[in-house]
Image (tube, rainbow, N blue to C red; front, side):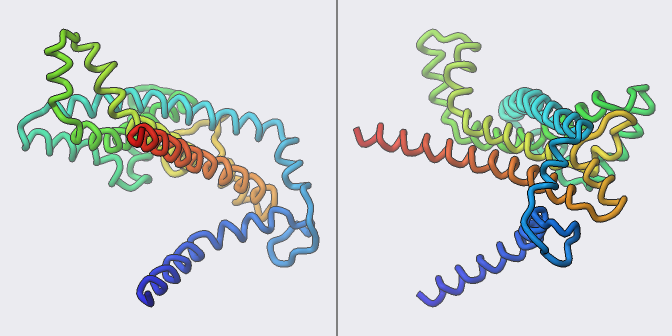
Length: 266
């Protein structure tokens, strides 16, 4: 009993340390004093400034478009990549493919961003929307592969064999057997890619150009100009949006698990 209590206290302290800076930022986003040293009164003026800034709203739209497009495209490519890796039967080539897939994940973001910058400069791609989108797709694909591949590995080959024996084509097996089975992994990969794209700064900072920006780069640029509680308000909104995505995915999975449990009981 005492051990469980100590574990709970330890977890609470860990989460408190992790979330304390975020809560501090959120708290002062409502400060009418205009600083982060003394809370003078409650106000929503900083949030009003965020929504009144047309340029900022365009940047928010840019961020959402890049995140959604990169997540959708990387999910398709990641699923195809996971299917290709799963079909490799020899252990050594499969491990090589998995290692290559993980390179972008374990590599420092600064190295990845600089590499993309050099690549786009050499091949003549203008820095802006296209360069940001391509780079986000590139670092999101390995994430999707990692989320989807375990679901493919745990799927019994008997399901595919049974479908083929019953006369299903390869396309039918893929669309009606494999994809429904790994659906949870696909959604997990999509939301992970979406979250990574929304939060990414280092890679985006290298490959963005004049006239195009994302929220993370814009927040960094404004923070360099001095402390402004508009940054707090903007960061709070971004944090809440990301949290809603995570909680939404969690409740969808929970609802699905409850539905499956009720079907099993019946």
